[in-house]
Image 1: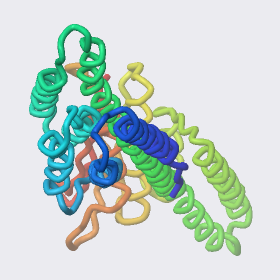
Image 2: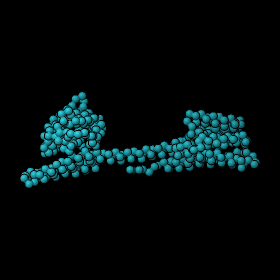
Image 3: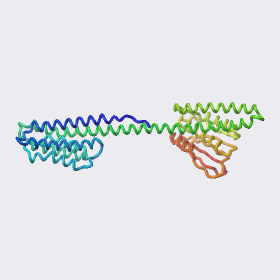
Image 4: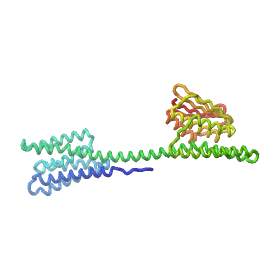
Length: 366
């Protein structure tokens, strides 16, 4: 099957780089600008390491489109590491870790709950950082950084996940297109070459029987055999190119000639109506498949091909009088014919009749 290179790896790498850069930036801010007093450097470093570590584990799982095996423990640990410094250290230390926690909450929780908790975190940071109008700008900076950093983290994770999902969908569509084309080629080869190969076999047998007693007739049948073989070669080329335009009247003429040369009387009654191309091609394939089955599987002496129209529908009926005794089963040709009829917006049915015959009926939009 075809496969396409997934463009998700660059998107995931971009998300990792940006999220890591934000984590490093907030860590530097925490270690350089917050005055936690002498002796608290090691404690603050350990606290930020815990914040960044839990945040990294949560984001790594989120970028893979899954939850960590330790969920929700890691989210709780990140929240504890974020707000524990407010009880141990002076200066509103959680302000530099809350933006990372906001991203985790938006990614892992339902969006409504996540937004509500982010709003509560903003209110909390505004409350503990407020030191009067002199600190209004600093307070506003840290409060605004909570939703902006959280939204950026959420967007990056969603971008990476959506890109991966689109890459998988693209691969699945490519595989489906390949499978569809294989089915088309298989069906067209069965429906198209079946009649031609049957005709070649019948004409070859007839020419062999006539060779000694009627050489002229044998030569005529050999010429017909060559003509049918050339048509089969053209059918193969049409299948390879995907070109399958067919004419109902032309297919009926070929079917009648083939049946007559095989000793089956053929009567054709076609309604004078112009059909849409999909409908006409579906009925033409119906004629081809039905005649192939008559020659292969029946003991028919008479075959009738009839088309009619009414109520916006065109109906094709192909009947013969030679169904062999014994149970029958639907073959691949009739299954493919039903699919063609369905694609044209119609239906197909085939069944023995009560008088020992067989009837194939197709209806398509007219």
